[in-house]
Image: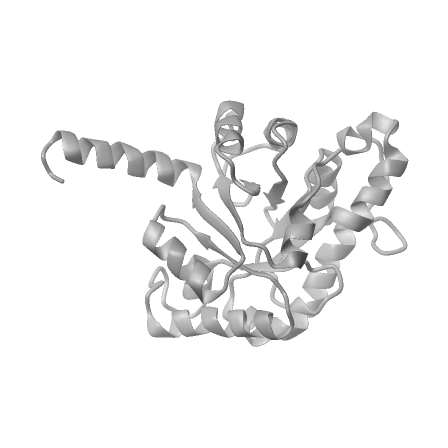
Length: 256
């Protein structure tokens, strides 16, 4: 049974800081879960993590008592069903660009009549003995996050974020910049303006907003918090590993 809490944190407006997992080893998931993050995201879109490895990572994180989300490869109802059955607390669905796509993502998470997810028995349902409890949990605690990462989504942000069942959003700055012809220029004024437009809309309709800060940059983390983001993915396993290695070597070599 997935752990409780993340949906309620989002609804209360509490700051939730998590991180991103792209390396498929269970020890990495356990280390990060025990570090104290409010949530962890297993990334299937930009990694080589298989569905079986994702199941193992979900189990480890869940047993550590940390809410676990899966960023799916796409708005794929079959994949969403499988990771939810494996025990994920929810999903982050990439490249949502319209209200219809947001509605499809929500429908893939929930059982009929609210949604269209196929009903089966797996780890999430305690292999059958916890089915009724899972159904209750699903309605009360499942989390669906729309990833806003295209300029078309920015233009339609209010329509997307008012879909019943979308609990929060997270901005994908790299793809957003690429969709504007400014690939990787995250500090460009137009990219910053687009991010701020989404944040203003989210605040207006009281929808928790998030952003993925890829680099382990503490000053930027503080800026995002000050801007009002309440759902923040702080860095990613491989960037934190690389950053720590290089920082240590700079000191050892007298470069810092």
